[in-house]
Amino acid sequence: MVESDRLDEIVQAWRDAENPVVFTGAGMSTASGLPDFRSARGLWKQQPESLATLTAMRKEPDEFYFFYQWRIARLWEVQPNDGHKRLVELERQGRVKTIITQNVDALHQRAGSQSVIELHGTLRTVSCVHCHARFESRQLLPKGEAWEAEYRAGLYRHGEECCCPKCGKMLRPDVVLFGESLPQDSWMKAVEWSRRSDFFVVIGSSLVVGPANLCPLWAAEGGGRLLIINAAPTPLDDKAAWIVREPASDVLKRIAEKMVP
Ligand SMILES: [Zn+2]
Image (cartoon, rainbow, N blue to C red; front, side, top):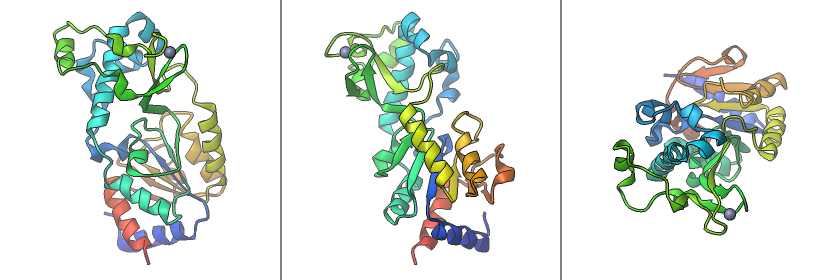
């Protein structure tokens, strides 16, 4: 556990910051009980990485849609955790200017955070590949309960829920698929905030996925002080002013309590 005087130092620096920015990854959502889809590898015939492509959507739609339906179903079953809620409090106090997230689970927004930049898109919505109409992602879930069991039995076929209600063409999750570039607008905002930030907090990211991992690097190179809260070492640890290896929700709780005078 991080010592109390070290925590005081972090809180003081956070308080003094003009542009505190938070950057989150998968570790942020662990406490919500969202299963890491990579850990469910046995479920799919292929590697998740090869399913998350437009090619898979066209050539193996049953595999593709089941993969996303499974993930979307899990997403709507979980709730934001205490860590997400602490970040909402900190934003309301002006202690978080924006959250840059690699997560597609939308749990920051569901918790109540206002300024969230989603670098990898979102699983909260799906869009039509043809007319670009957008729907809440629950639209993509099959009716009834049997579909997961059907998949396991090799009987699953994707259905009309995967088609746009307006034009009938395919719906796709609004996430960045492998081979696609990041949403330009989100990326530009993230770059700008990272360069401007004087206090940059990384939470639950191993900082190995590019180009997202350039954000903390630019913050550090621009003179921002880096706080890394992550279970495992990251490639940017040597640039960090503080490294904390504790669950994010525990650390944020202690920081938020000290932050309020
Ligand atoms: Zn359409």
